[in-house]
Amino acid sequence: MELERKELTGKIISCGIEVHRQLGPGFLESIYHSALLLELKRQGLKSEPQKEVRIYYLGHEIGVHRLDIIVNDEIVVELKTVSEFNDVHLAQLLSYLKATELKVGLLMNFAQSILKVKRVVSK
Image (cartoon, rainbow, N blue to C red; front, side, top):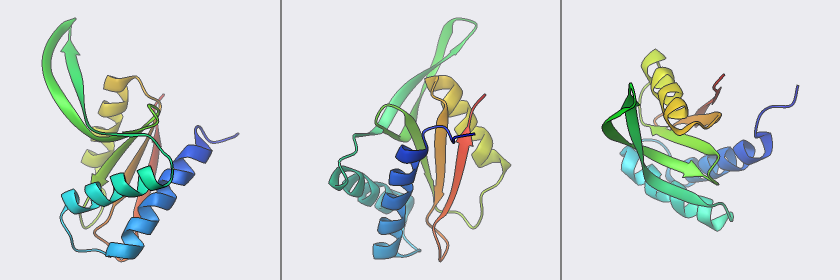
């Protein structure tokens, strides 16, 4: 079965790899965020940083959350600078997908010697 949004996620991952190749590990998440936005733009992808998403409970707005990046109005990209992904990171991205009603997200961890990426598809 064809992966959901395979081509676009591949381009985003390539951008992340280029950023990691240029900068390496060790910077704050905000540095990678800025660099990834530049690389996405350089590759012709539309990115929306710090997208505000309203969170509802029982039909009532209860808060606003900011997502790291949404690419081409289709993919949520969540950046991390942690030793390893854990279940909380996965749960966080799944919640973002639910809140945005988008289907595919990418977790990207820039803190290791090789960029770590986890592709997540909501049901």
